[in-house]
Image (tube, rainbow, N blue to C red):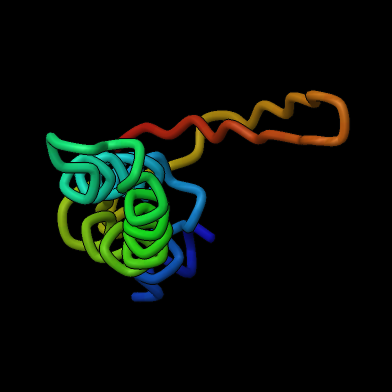
Length: 103
């Protein structure tokens, strides 16, 4: 992947599992819910708040990717090298941590 990033495949740096996407979804959903609930008769407006949250989470798929691509993630890997790879298992889930350094 490092070689492919070096050759210009910048989309490899953007992941749907990035924390940026999760944070964007949370902020959009919370904001949509708060606006939909308003300040009066909140219980009666709960269905609208749920629907607003659903739409916000759908929108977050696109907004989160945009934020990640243009603000929080850099595909520029010139001079970067991999210094280590650690694998950890959590039940059926496997997580890899790739350590890098410049130079």
